[in-house]
Each structure stands twice: as structure tokens, then as C-alpha cells.
Image 1 (cartoon, rainbow, N blue to C red):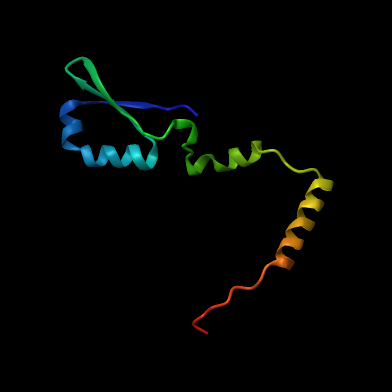
Image 2 (cartoon, rainbow, N blue to C red):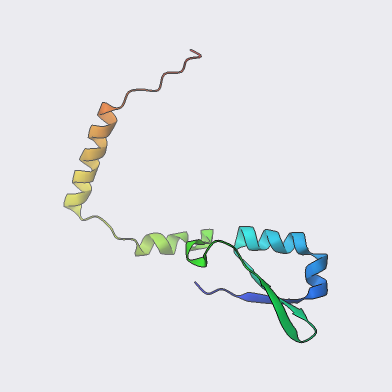
Length: 95
């Protein structure tokens, strides 16, 4: 995943700090803050980027994920059926 860092002025950052923080938190955006011609700060997500994933990237993630062969898939299905057969139904105390 390529991260694009947006460069903005310190004035712009101060005027739109709430919006910048929302973009960093919810979209994983990165911002470089310039004062004059010098980058003096960066605003980046706290979570390491390798754990951030955009919704639009889910299909590619699933396409790269390993798949079970037919034999393993059948065994997995049988295991799930055994587990479900052993589960007790939820009891609603309000009924």
C-alpha cells in the first residue's frame, strides 16, 4: 500500500486541525506541516500502517489469502457442523 503524504501550511493546519485529525484517524491520511519552506512536523496515524486497510482494498486482500483445498474444506465444514450440533441455543430470559 502506498501512502501519499499531503503537505500543508502551518496556518492551514491550525485552521482545520479537527478535520485533519479525523482524516488521519479514520482514513489513515498523513500530513506534513510546513512553516515557510521548511517541513516542521508530520501528523500520522498512531496505528502502524501495516494494520490499516482501506475498505476498497478488501477484495485484493481476500484474493491473495490462501484457500483450502477441497479435502480440507470438507473437513472444515464437518468440524463446523459438529460444533454447531454441540452448541446450546441461546435462552432469552425475557421470554
